[in-house]
Length: 128
Image (cartoon, rainbow, N blue to C red):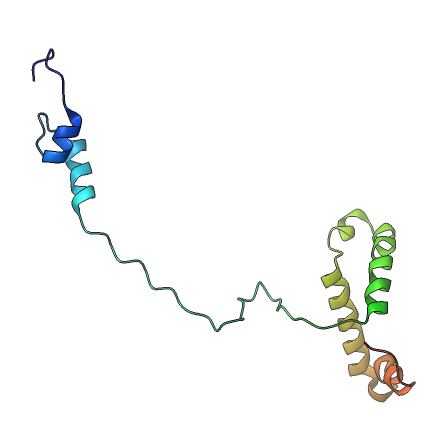
């Protein structure tokens, strides 16, 4: 091509005529003109289900207002008592999980004499 002649790139693109062909331009043209590949099929989950993370499972349970407030008040106090590495692992979830593990272990060992059974047998409580 004559270096003094101006290239009309837009005209070349619209008409498909090119003055110079390069391997890169040929590759680009091939890429742009090939049909799109179909998107991979996604596996569908049941609505409302979430994948499990590690060995944990998401569960929603209700706490009484008094229990929740007490937990919120005690979390910073518990955190102050723990060493720094243990402080990082303390969260509402880890606290509830630990409490459940302790209660279930106590029940497995003591059965009717467990703290959990005695708690429920001691009388009605406001669980709302």
